[in-house]
Length: 192
Image (cartoon, rainbow, N blue to C red; front, side, top):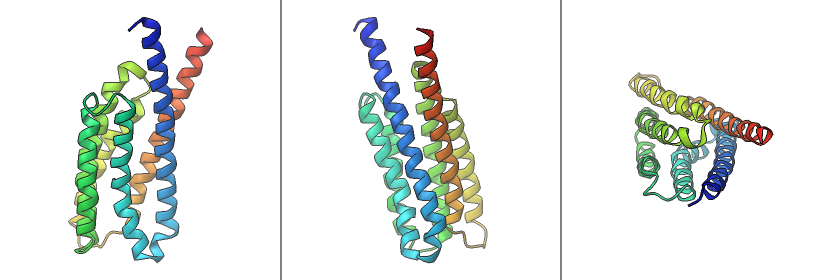
C-alpha cells in the first residue's frame, strides 16, 4: 500500500469515526430524554430501555469493528460485543428480581465495557488522534461501574435515572470526540 493509499484509508476511517461518534451521541441523548421523560410513567418502557442500552452498545461496537477492519483487527470491540450482549440478557433476567440487581449488572458492564473502550481508544490514538475523550470515557465508565455496584448493595431501590445520568455523560464524550475529530480534519486541511 502506498503512502497516498494509506493516507486516504486513514481519512476514510477518520470520517467513519466522526459519523460513528455522532450516531452514538444521538442515540444516547435520545435514550436519556426518553428515560427521564417517559420511562418514569411506564415500567414496560423503562424495562425496554434498560435492555436496549447494552443491546445498542453491542450492535454499535459490532458495526464499528466491521467498518474498521473487522473483528480480528478490533478484538477489544469484539469482546465488548460479547460483554454487551451478555449484559442485555442478564438485565432481562434481573428485571424479574429487582432494580438493585439490574443496577449491579449495569455496574459490572460499565466496568468491563469501559475498560474495553479505553483499550480501543488507546489503540486508535496513534492513528487518528482525538481519542482523549474516549480514554476519559472508558476510565470514567469503569469508575461509575464501581459506584453502581455500591448503590446496588444499598437498601434504597434505584431507578432508570441512575443509569440515565451515566448515559448522558457517555453521550457527551461521544459528541466531544466527533467534534474534536472534525476540528482536527479542518486543521489538517488548512495546513495543506
